[in-house]
Image (cartoon, rainbow, N blue to C red; front, side, top):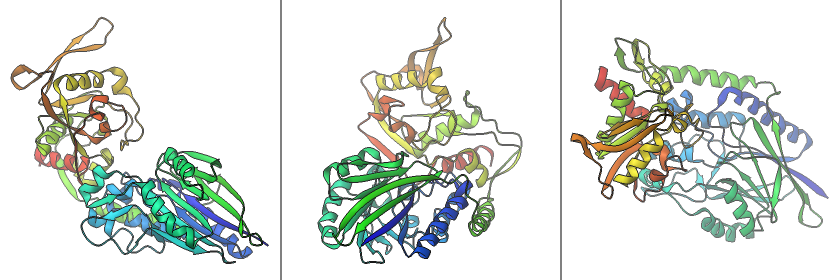
Length: 465
């Protein structure tokens, strides 16, 4: 006798709710089909369902995302970094208090007090014909952030090895919900051949029909839930083992919208608008934003980063401010709209020569026009760099390019090449190789939980209040 077991999954929605009701429709219909045919199925999410770029997520700090997962009938979820490090300790501790689903994350630990009641390392679910399936969750270890918020994320592979010692004795099938990224998923598959399926996320990779690494089937459904994933497991009861594993992704663009989900979203949108309507300041004239210029508000915000951190200098790119503000009352919703990024301030230590090189690369046309995706940035282009405490001395070359001859601090004193300085900037530049000198800095101090927009609101009050 054979039994088919289904897992439907989503990953990395990032609060892109435009088509969430179509996702909900697909999932509800899939579960109803399984109920009619008598087959077992579960719906799971791999994290980053929340992203505070959306007003609903901003207003409710993820609680509305939990309600939407409840309404769509989810059974199991794990956490992404957007759930873990973009809200305060207390907000994360209470995030899933009203969840009707199980939350699994085996490598997240509370360092302040008792772990939340909803947090489990893994769960065992049983099919209608008695097959036991262990579902484990793992999240990416951004401990430079987590530990400032009162959490610790243990090394995923070490924690997984520990958990497998237990679940190997309890389960017939092992599934890992991995918010670690594609390369980490491949490494897990190579190192732990007894894992049957790895459902992934975080790096937004799309594996339309899955792929095998070692003995594990790896799958993921891209980002923003334009696709929903499906895993089909066929269990041979006579032989007591898995006969086959399959993975597919389905585009949800042609599915109708679920009416109940649409109503819930509309209600949350109205509530979010009211919550974010709190006034910040009233402008007597239009406040200009220009990605290619250092406007007064960008300069003031850059200076606020220096003041916030007591760093020697600060630099910030114009692209973090998305649009101008018209004359009149400015609400927190307006501030969120023009600065929606989950970006924090970071201070790094650099030598004078490293700062000069960082400024040189940041003032190139190629850098300013770069259309950045990810690293917390939710804008269009990086834009012009503003500075506080620093004055680049520039020379325009014959080809139109700008050359940085030297960089001076207050009173026209040039930076000393080998002297160490502290520089405040957006944490965006501590990742990847956008500005290598900043990314390579051995000292990085992040400032949480305030986002850049919180500092912007304070700056606006100081400038115009």
